[in-house]
Image 1: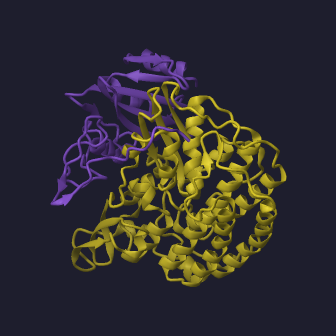
Image 2: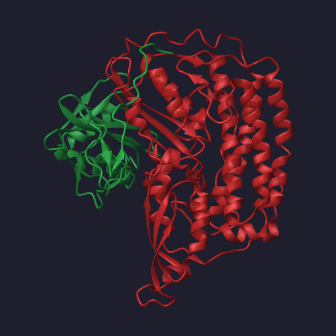
Image 3: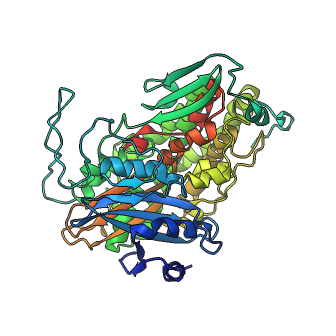
Length: 165
Length: 396
């Protein structure tokens, strides 16, 4: 199925989905309220049958936070990309870890590094950083702490020259 | 391949008996919490597993990762597009070529570069060589974890030949920085392909030797067959890919089903686990899939050298990254430890806006509590080694 047809299926089911023609691949933008229902439909519908969540990535855009879901169906061999936005001051998106268990650790990672809280996640703890770490390092305004348990940390990240190649 | 039919009997613990165990009234011994790692030789790096045990039975597994976190995604946001390649190499340091290929293909997709046939063919050749080197380590350390010392020496010797060839190609033995965006750092040296062909002819008879030494060894089969059985449904649900997925019987290989870098031009057959010594998806299947993938990789290498076209490996390399197209792309490639998916977001500047790497080993280790709970402590060593994790790729 093409992304347009998948988008049509979701809008027919009464979900708030918009089709975005973003190069190089199109994607579907979904509101966080209809995410879980859409995920359930995408997985259980026999024509869609998205049984695999390939990747869950979170990122910070200038005005909002975003989670990107890359889905794949082993049965029909088709792909779709979903994007869900949430505001920076209320960074909550419903979890899909019940639907695709891959999301369990990926949502923990997104919470750890970006700071999006996934509502309904069974075990939302930090995963890559230690539990008492402060802040979410992949936020653009993140300032690394000067000390961690008395260990001095370099505050300067790598700043290479301007030339490419 | 030499097959040993008379050993095809069910061995190892009976999974039905394990399911029937009543763990509530403590029939086997005392309950305790056991820390496996982070400095445990069988965890292949710095992985910590917190085990709840009941006698010899593991009743709960909680993995803790992050000991090797090197902030790859944060660093990638602060360097320019070509400068990310050395960092990508260090993710899965046993298969650096496959890592840099995934990243290079992604940036090329974003920029709309279609590299020429010579670059594609050399990339396939070096990636398959690195896959063999990586599987050699996986198989060798698997034997070591089970208690067999000789396969380690045997396979590290073969891997050494590949590393020598890589050293002649690009100067590096472990981390190469060879595959660049839109090309390669330099062309192959004269006479190098003959040496690679010599290596192929040398390596092909080594596989039956390995099968005699380890694959069909009765002790090895008893330790691995019917142990850590992963169903294909569980593997797909947890996003497990690559050899671990194929060992469960799912016939899916990115190189054949969604070819990239010209893989559609090669004849090969992905190895599938069929439960020859036990059930599909057990540790022995995961092991034998890797052995058979070495054979397939050797076939691909020979075909790549036979069809190596002429061309310039540097002419398509972009000189300027100041005008990157705005957008995001997700590219998957078949790395030795499962699919490497890289999600790249560009905001038009010369530095990536966001790089997210989805590694095969990360998903494999996340599924460990789901399919290994209820095994014996000694079997857990066999299971952790059989899913072939590299913590550099898990923690990034």
